[in-house]
Amino acid sequence: MTTAETSENGQEAASGRQAKIVALVVAVSFFMQILDGTIVATSLPQMAASFNVQPVSMSIGITVYMLTMAAFIPLSGWLGDRFGARRVFLTSIGVFTIASLFCGLSGSLTEFVLWRALQGAGSALMTPVGRIIVLKNARKSELVQAIALITWPALTAPVIGPVLGGFITTYASWHWNFLINIPIGILGMGLVLRFVPEQRESDPGRLDILGFILSAAGLTVLLAALELSVKWDGGLLPVMAMLAAGIVLSFLATRHFLAVDNPLLDLSAFRVQTFSMSTLSAGTACRTAINATPFLLPLLFQLGFGLSSIAAGTYLLVYFLGNLGMKTVTTPLLRFFGFRTVLVLNGLIAAFSIVACGFLSSDTPQFFIHALLFLAGLSRSMEFTALNTLAFADIGPAQRSSASTLSSMLQQVSMLLGVAVAAAVLNISSAMRGADNPVLADFRWAFVVVGAIGVASSLRFLQLPAEAGAEVSGHGKFRRN
Image: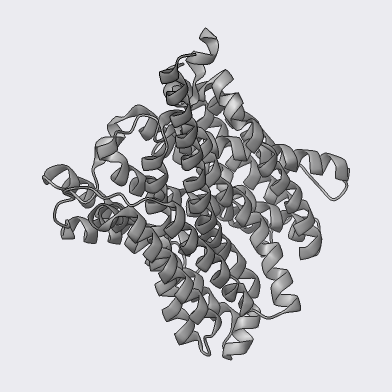
């Protein structure tokens, strides 16, 4: 090996280490953000008692967080380009951390809602800008590992959150569900200052104010409609009216972005097949099916099996272990099989494992339940990592900011859409029986419908070329070797 080759290999190794470090730094902040979103629900009754309000009133704290986040997500890419991704990411962590502190110190519902709104604004910038940082610091050959590192918080935090939140609320107080973010946030900011380099676009252009208003309003109204449909309050008419309004606003935003010279969001990324399929069409449907599972499983174990929340949490920990178990083999599997094969076959495994969950009962052997949940966790982890990586496999540098923002917007929609679809099937099935609460038969229908969506979306990936994303996965290189 020549001196030049040795030097080049050393530079590549150093670049790979830097990309991993940056991804780990971003992942720490993502974990804090996603954990907060799942941990809060466990303490709502105690918070209601502390604020002297009805427990149902506390749902506004979750709703205002979600809607504020939806309103500011479209702005994230432009802010990162205008002020620098590192600076905006650091600011978003700081805003989120400060808001968490005051959420924990709130003495009334009004105070809590105001600070939750600020927390949502910080959260809105964190995910898309953090992903932009990772994309700018990782070469295509390093992208699978980098994306896998920033994907694990989304896989693990929703499972850990309810268990950890229940423990904190039971043995400490609800305040610590927010105060726990303070040391994590400080650690995250310190790591960003130490390891994340500053990068800024030379000419981001002026802010597209009309585009921001239309896209923010469209996403906010759509998510509000999905949230309202889950709660099943107020009947069908308000939900349909809000859905229609959200669709109209989103259409107007799209038309605006296509018509102006310097749009807030560059929609040209959707002309890239790998991005379009993994985010907008098959990707959204696939995420919808998989995101419904963490919502359905705790209800199945508690309402269908009659288990306590602690016992249900034990089953969810097995699901969580499955998510972790796939991390070490994700990169070699993608390299050996390629994105198309993995997304189709692993997607089908994920979908059929979801369907199989619907046929579980309290009489099912515990070993079989554990094995099925572990398999579901494995396939969930692989599918999310493959989708998140393929989305940016062919995205050029000029498209990264808008592509990251668009991806975050669509992932928010798919998260609530999965819960909305599952809740709708449960409610319809229960209503047809004339009952108020779902039983095992209702859960069976919900899992089957959600699994069918997963099957259909997995088969859609057959439209991808066999070598899609090969430059990122190294699939063709593996075959040549």
